[in-house]
Length: 254
Length: 241
Image 1 (cartoon, rainbow over the protein chains, first blue to last red):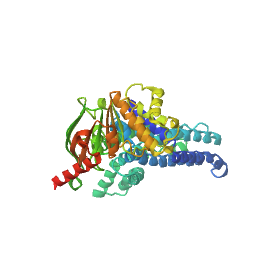
Image 2: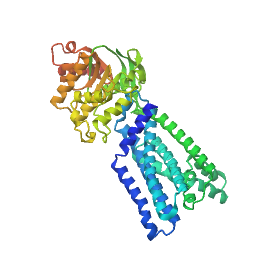
Image 3: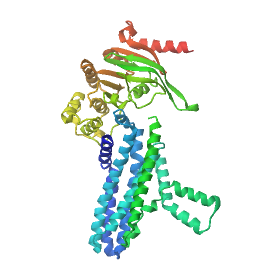
Image 4: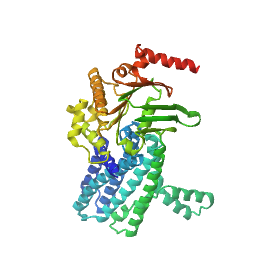
């Protein structure tokens, strides 16, 4: 446990010093802040301010997660920096978990910073304290954690560039699989095609479970059970992905 | 004692199968042991198997009777990889702190780590980002990080590569000092001159096979080490044909 914590802390320290992260986080912060000015000029309704701000936070977090998840772990293994760690009393599982939690901390830090900016913007735009907005950002963080776990899993057996492709595909499919199943049902599709759509649904994570932005934008309370379900879903998916990642990494010759 | 017993390492499967180390056995008891061999001879594979970075396909490696890849063995081991890549955005002292925290216990603190940086000759660069370090400074930092746990066994893969004459002199002096303290140093190198100077015994490895292991003087028998090394490798090649 101590080793996982040490590696996670080190990963956080290293990644927040990365110029790309600094640039993306600053840009995201600027984007959220600019909503305040746009609210007077273009976005005359509070719901529009919230929608654009939450979407912006989601987009920037996804870009940061994609960048970190596909490069950080892969770079350590490829450049053999990992030798310094694994030649010490540290298992491969500890190293991989340390990297994962470290990257989660980076995304959490980014989300927390942007959440503070978001709450400030909404309050100044006359919306008061937006608890649902905060929950929406928290749910986005859970989605990013799945995203990171998947990116690390793919990084254990493929190059950084391919990891970006695979992770992006899963990200896209993760947002459309539930719609695909519903559409297939409504259109009356049966047989092999329906089975195929269902296989996709069960293989890829259903990332729409973490999208409660609409609830936040219209200030409607989302059912509490959905939060618990989403949390359990994210935890199960992350555990499965990390388990697979450790299994592959254990067999990899570095 | 470091004991390598019937170790074989095969990389890949099927058509990509490549024998890197072939039924290799060796016991090392001397303070400083040097592994000699051409590039691709299998030296790095062996050092990686000893330090647990790679698993042997067959055979065992033990240190004082304990399997070398065990966490308890690693606590007593220091390793410096060949041409090390560091976390560039860390400073020298931050990197040593990170390495030290990967060992059980509360660590020895900054005073001890500063001592290592002084010993390695890069104390002045303690708070500089590693990205600003020269190749020689990186080698020195790699050497310092291998000592953060005050190990009894030190494994160095091409430690003198990229060092200037003063750096080489300092590192060799450090190795000799460590040996005097009762530590065991195991180094891979293809710089024969350095081996002659610091090693008590050498092992000559070629195509994953051990061709000779024993005292340097016995191997040379009054002739230059380079000449004997080339002769040994050529004799093996001739026998193979």
